[in-house]
Length: 209
Image 1 (cartoon, rainbow, N blue to C red):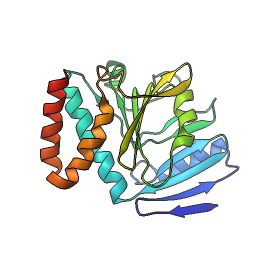
Image 2 (image 1 turned 135 degrees about the horizontal axis):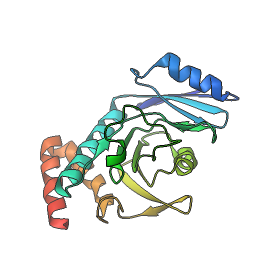
Image 3 (image 1 turned 135 degrees about the vertical axis):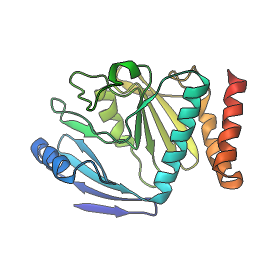
Image 4 (image 1 turned 45 degrees about the vertical axis):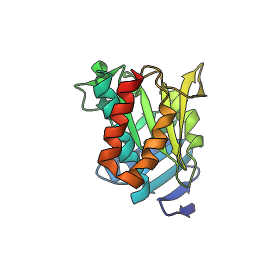
């Protein structure tokens, strides 16, 4: 086992873990927990986010809902729901996830099964100290169409094309808006406060559309 501790998260990596052990851990740990689990063909990572990590994740969630309101889009948030498929021997719990284009298909569901349900349209990962790039192949294989990664004051947007993520300056889900600008608003919140930043972001979105 290798354990990494940082100011924004704690991680433990286990190797040679069977799918059954992964499923057992999920069941025993339950849903009411702070830690997030990633499984990739025998390698398992348990990550516990600390306050800085969750702060940026919460701010991004607020801005995503502003986008939904201003663009008149329905959004079904699924948080850190476990996304997994046994046939691929892969699974991950993102920092946050959202159904937007496929919102109507899951609106009334209490459980997501990727063997019959679509993957979330958008997954967000916060990378303040440790990269989640190893999750890209997992999310691509599960069919997540767009991935956002916030890392050291920069928002990276990736779109799934032919099974691979391609970096982009804009979002296909949100009307091709240049959402890499979100990072500027997130950083601005440290100077002017969260609510004023959110109002500024709303005005910016209105100007763009």
